[in-house]
Each structure stands twice: as structure tokens, then as C-alpha cells.
Image (tube, rainbow, N blue to C red; front, top):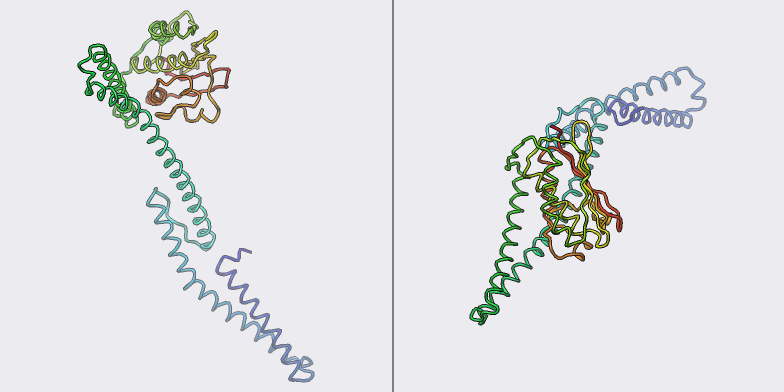
Length: 352
């Protein structure tokens, strides 16, 4: 029996009260009248009065529950539903017999939603703090450099031909770094908001990769990294924004060179046919990424502790841009890595 329904609650209370009345009646009659239960009329009176008390009590309880208590609960239920419906469209609330059950379910569901929102807000707040800290860190270095160079020039270095041009050159380099950071942030913002329009064309992604490898070949030589392109020996046509995919390949391959193994370093690029898509994988045998950092490598300005230890260069924006470009193509990108073994970045493109 569902005791949260009005009729069942009224039956339960009426049964308890009428039963109590019957017990008291028997007890009182036995004390006041000798041999009271030897008469038929005593049993008849007991039965009639018990039934009447049951019916009257049931009617009173049911009326009270329906007209007063449950009417208030319905208002509470509708208020809860109205607040929830303000966030997202929901069907009309069911105010049937099992109103208590509905209210309980709504409250539990509401509590669960609120807890999820609180957890999400906490994560966003932590992300905001990290983001501001990382932005401050990345902007601080070039700004302090510029301040130092300009102060030196103003303190007399401008008249010294041995340092004036060199310090101006360094100042220019730091300014270029600041401009690049702002340009990258603007690009990410446009990709996130959908304002950047992709120029979708058909092209050979292997040929494009070969061009990127040639551009990075000298840098790879300086870092003693060997780049291996597993050429399938045929055109691998995809539909995408060629310039943006060039940027994706450049950023990932450049990272593999920067954080590659300094002894027998190797970056391997392979393409796989995935029916409707082409999967590109760039694998290196470099320092690898900690498991705790893997989930955050695509965050803007995020750089792992191991990455900072290897090189002070890099703004932590390259992989964030890569992720947004790939997702703007309605495709996916993933990363897997092991410390001391290496890292593999893989992304898909639509096959042409």
C-alpha cells in the first residue's frame, strides 16, 4: 500500500482511530456493566459505533488531506516545476493522485541538477583562476623584457652603438611575441564563436604534410629529430580548410620536435583510412605527458611542468588552436602518451 496517497492515508488513520475506539469501548463496557458482552445489543452497538467512527474519521481525514494539505503541496510542486521550466522546456507537471511521490522525485531531481551546476561552477572558477594566472605568466615575461630594454636605452644605452641596435632588436622581438599572443587569442575567440569562416576545398593531405615537413626540416635537424612520413604512395584527398590544417600539422609536428628525444629522436606521421574519414597520427618518442596533464593539454596557456623544464619557449596556445580548428571542421582530436615513451596526437578529417 502506498501510504503517501490521500485515500490510503485516510484509511490508515481511520482504521487506527476506529480500532482504538473499539478497544476503549470494550474495556469501558467491561468495567461499567457486568456481563455486558452477554447481550447481543452490546455487540451490535460496538459494531455500529466502530463502523460509524471509521466512516466519519475516514471522511474527515480524506477531506482535510485533499482540500488543505495536498492543495498546498500541489502549489509547492507547481512552483518547483515552474522554476525548473524556466531553465529548459519541460512537459506540464503531473498532479495526479501520487502527488507526494511526484514532489519527492522533483525535489530529488532538482537537488541533483543544482549539485551538478555547483560542481560545474567550481570547475569553471578553478579554470578561470588558472587561465588568469597563465595569461599573467605569459604576458609578464615579454613585458618585463621590454621594460628592461627601454629603461637601459633611456639610461644612456641609446647613445652607445654597441647596445642600442641590439636592445631595440630585442624589444621588437618581445613586442612581436605579445602581438602573436593577442592574435592567437583572437583566433581562438573567433573559432569558439563561429565567426571564423572556413574555406573548405579538396586537397591531398599527404602532399600538404610533406610541405610542412620540408619547412620544419632544418629545425628538426638542429634538435636531432628525424621526421618520418609514411607515404601511402597515393593521393589522400580530404575536404577541409587547407591553411587551417597546415596550421594544425605545423603546431603538432613542431611540438614533437621541441619536446622530442635528444638521442635518436623520431617523429612519425601516418594516415589511416577510416571509411568516411581520414585519421592522421603524429607520434614521437619524446619526454611524454603525465596522465594528470593529458586532460588539460588543449587548454589555452596550459603548459606541463615537464614541458616548461625542457624549453621556456611556447605560449601554451598552439594545441588550444589545434583543437578548435579540428572541432570547427566537425571532427575530433585526441592524445595518448606515456612518460619516457612518447606521445601520439591523432585527428580526423572528412574524406573527399
